[in-house]
Amino acid sequence: MVRIVEVGPRDGLQNESVPIPTETKRSFVEALLSAGLFEIEATSFVSPKWVPQLADASELLASLGSPEGARFSALVPNRTGLERALASGVGRIAVFTAASDAFTVKNIGMTVKASLATFAEVVAAFRAARPDGWVRGYVSTAFECPYAGRVEPAVVVGVCTRLLELGVDEISLGDTIGVAAPREVRALTAAVLGSVPTGMLAYHFHDTRGTAIANVAEALEHGVTAFDASAAGLGGCPYAPGAGGNLATEDLVYFLERSGVPTGVDPVALARASLPVLGVLGRSPGSKVQRAVLGA
Image 1 (tube, rainbow, N blue to C red):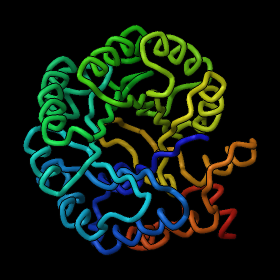
Image 2 (image 1 turned 90 degrees about the horizontal axis):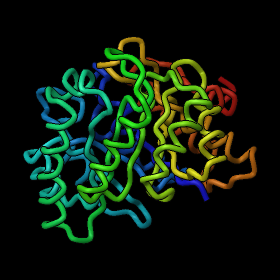
Image 3 (image 1 turned 45 degrees about the vertical axis):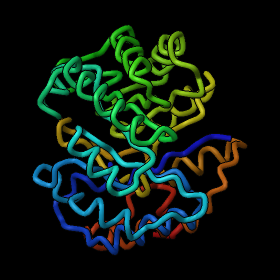
Image 4 (image 1 turned 30 degrees about the vertical axis):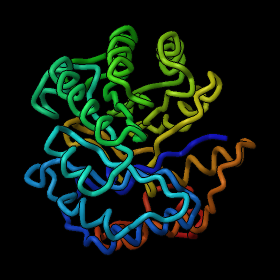
């Protein structure tokens, strides 16, 4: 069965300038759970100064509690963020680097090497505090950097190898600016799977140029069974000029189900889950499948 990691509440909302009430976020997450999505990246413990939209991380997680079957995670950028996350009882965290120095410097103010050194401390401290915890490592710009151009698969493999040495449980490779085509997914997957076990690899596709579903199909052919997606296609990257939204969860679920791959997700409940958030943002449904399901 394919794993869908719903990133809408974190990656989908983090760059929105319109403040979204904590109650609306909580209802959004609960609606996603009701639709059958249980693995949800709920928030981030990044500095409220830099990402004010997620300043309510602790409050949100407290309001969500521990619903049966739910696997909530949070992005943790540094030791300060980790301390806040641990105080909130988080058992699953994610750390965030890239395959391009130009991107990490723009994004988090340090080189890839420096970011990995920081995350080594974060992961070690998390493991000490939560021996039963789970850690994901994100690798952005796995195909191309908006500042430095194309990224060679060997560079991505090097970053993945280092993340494995840090002790992460999963690596998610990101097509941050949505440029990849299936041929590139095939090449990168073949290279990475020489070092990363198939069960530890996920993909995070953006649909900027309409190739996300084709890329999912290619990755599936090579045994990858974990994909990130965002309800209504919410999200983008402020450090990637021109980058569009994430792969819409509605589109991914439809593609998988139509292809004979069960997801356990209710498409109608999923299509409705993001409507309150879209209402606050003053935005119409952004997913083709969502619009089809709702008749919008």
